[in-house]
Length: 254
Image 1 (cartoon, rainbow, N blue to C red):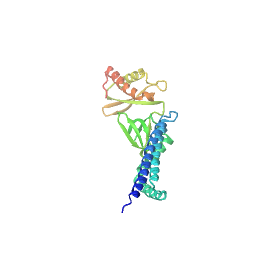
Image 2: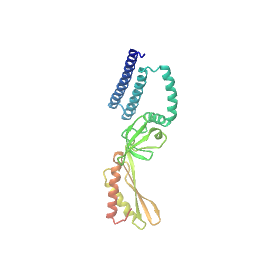
Image 3: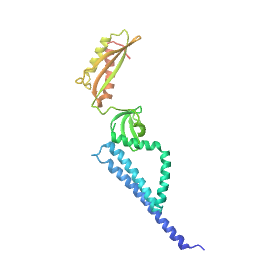
Image 4: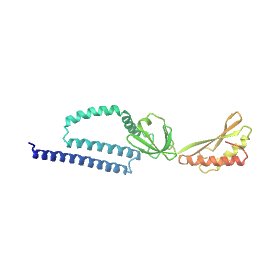
């Protein structure tokens, strides 16, 4: 004959454990979110470190909450450790890429080849670093698309940071017909470059040289210095201003 009191007591005990486990997970996830937001608001901390630390702490607290919930359900510690070790080994082998990305994230934060807000070129993608998380780095590309790159790849790739130095050198090339008056072209290009306020002539005056003569064409190369923040703007302005100067001088160009 069924013992109704026994099943009621068992259901009550299991139910309470289940409710306790769910509560632990819910509270743990809430705490993880609060800690993440708290870290992100610490303005005295470097923004790159904030981004990485916030995602790491959130993940660690969530994992701890799940483990605590399993203990609350009555999972024996010894059995749990054994199972966790086996599962950890299997997951580790299956997630070598994720572990490499995690290690890469730590290296990026420690050695800081770039930080949030820097304009960089990573694995052929150019843009502004928006976030460095524990597994991925997010770029806002120059064409306004979002690019997500695995940290593990970045630690083994060339990183071009165009924000570190205050000044940058800009080079533009102009292809002219071979029979063009190259000296007139040079003077027109230099005049346009020297008139632009973004050109830092104090570092080095603009230089225009004939870089090559190939077949029926000549190439003139313009080199100027500017502030890193003005690089893109100056490149666009000089392309238009020098083209207008060459047109005014009656010189064909490409």
